[in-house]
Image 1 (tube, rainbow, N blue to C red):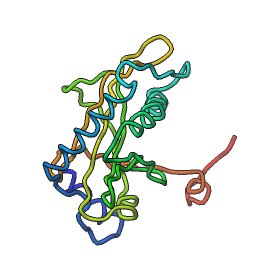
Image 2 (image 1 turned 45 degrees about the horizontal axis):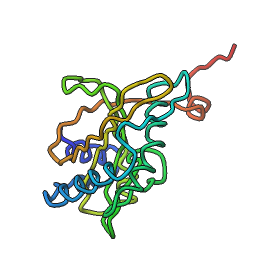
Image 3 (image 1 turned 180 degrees about the horizontal axis):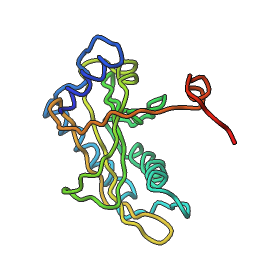
Image 4 (image 1 turned 30 degrees about the vertical axis):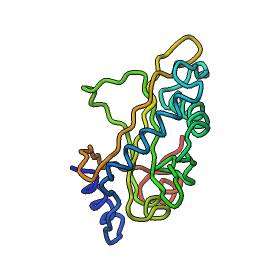
Length: 193
């Protein structure tokens, strides 16, 4: 399935008339962003810097700590774009802004970049934030911070930018979740012992 096919199907499942939520990147824009990120990384004490990690942190917690460490450095170094928090839960965590242009940006972190690794990296399960905060054209940027684990922290090695396209392949898994309210109000039998 492609990224745009996913959002088309997702919107139908959510009860919305599907509209395009993934647009093709103009090559000039990808070049502008790549140059600005390169300049941003070079202008800050970034590569080789060590992000302190709390002892016993899970992989997800490490990713969150790396994000909190990296975003201010990147933000300070960018000249033509700004990284901003995208309010609310879910995809995207961040947005990249230049004037009126607003781009969904998801930041991930990994200590083991392997092009043959097929482990899932969850991006999104809802179209709500895209429909609420972004207008067409909607470009999607995945920013992966590559790090090396060291005693007491992670050393930042590089940043990988993936400019996701409508035809970018994605893996989709339909999931079911519950919460306390659903469990408490459900018509099923429950026993607390």
